[in-house]
Image (cartoon, rainbow, N blue to C red; front, side):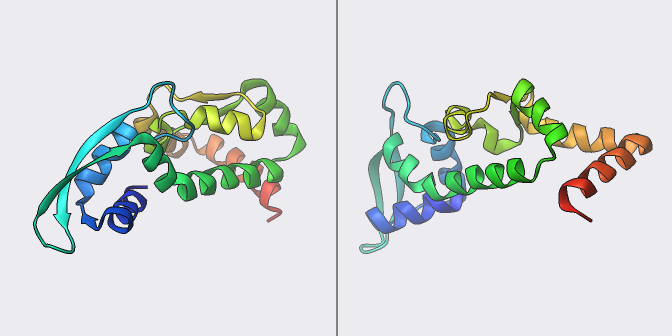
Length: 159
């Protein structure tokens, strides 16, 4: 997502920004679905034509456009995973919903967009940044659970 923001600003404004700036923009303005209130932010970078520092103002709408391919990729991956989910697990997903984890889960209104696109409830994990690591640790410390998940996964993939 950060790279998508960097490339968008480079193409549209001829402005080079760094990784930290792209991350700050994503956190401040990034969203998967329109926000209730428009946001904007001043961004400083190096003008690629003149080579001097320049400040521009960007909006959440522009950043949503910059992130549209990345968000579409996430949504398509969820759709593929849902299509491959065995019927036994589908009932759980319909009842409990999709749980978003990881840093991307913090993208504003991504849950709303996924809910609209899939028709399923979507919730954000309590601690999305740590939940993947904590879940992996739990799996590795419980061999029986690991075997059961591996067996369930082989049903999904057919291997």
